Image 1 (cartoon, rainbow, N blue to C red):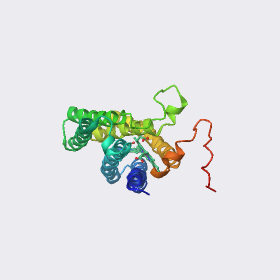
Image 2 (tube, rainbow, N blue to C red):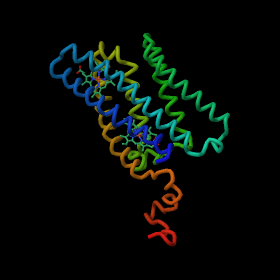
Image 3 (cartoon, protein in one colour):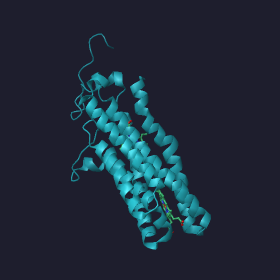
Image 4 (spheres, protein in one colour):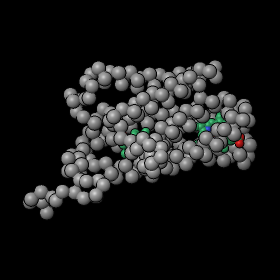
Length: 229
Ligand code: HEM
Ligand code: HEM
């Protein structure tokens, strides 16, 4: 394991250690709200839910930053220091919007900062360094893409985070929240599957030259070098 490999582990490790346990608690509390109608469960679910949504955005930003920053060694970064500075600004702007989303009270402001945060994630995700299985919604690969389900899930989380006061008060938004969250729960499961798949497919950094010499469609690799057993 090189330091780059450890950086790549950061995102899956955070998902396993922080996100999924938190998701378990949030879903358990959602169940209690529906069964017992207790005010305590509602408040706890909303509080932990806001942390879950925030953690998901930070998790995705970690993956995108690592992927973009480590694709090439720093001195060969595509676009040079100017592009690196631009992307850093987008990252800082996204983090700023997320913080503002927590602080902001008026509904229009919350909507704006939620959309800005999502736009930041999409902008970083659109960089050529980021691996996306397919960008064509009509292909099967699109629906198996860890990237697209990930940014979709981020959007759903940002919706709940932005609209949580209304979800507490209005029946209509509560219903919308439940539908959005059922979809989100599905995407969380999908991310667990496609994420571990990707982890299995991505070689350690020192193995990359050998593994990427393989033909991924024909599933064949060049014969091992002479002398290797
Ligand atoms: C996948 C995860 C989630 C699931 C399955 C889920 C599900 C639910 C359900 C079933 C309810 C009860 C609705 C009703 O009254 O019938 C609820 C309420 C609520 N949820 Fe979530 N939710 C999730 C994530 C979140 C997140 C990320 C937030 C972020 C802020 C959030 C905030 C709220 C709030 C504020 C309420 C109203 C609670 C109250 O009664 O005061 N939820 N949710
Ligand atoms: C809440 C769940 C998750 C979300 C929203 C999420 C989202 C993302 C996004 C948007 C990317 C960047 C695009 C890409 O390189 O494919 C990514 C990368 C990646 N994800 Fe996830 N992911 C989640 C959970 C997981 C889990 C559970 C694993 C594995 C155990 C995993 C493994 C990976 C790997 C290996 C990468 C490649 C880049 C890296 O490691 O930084 N992800 N994820």
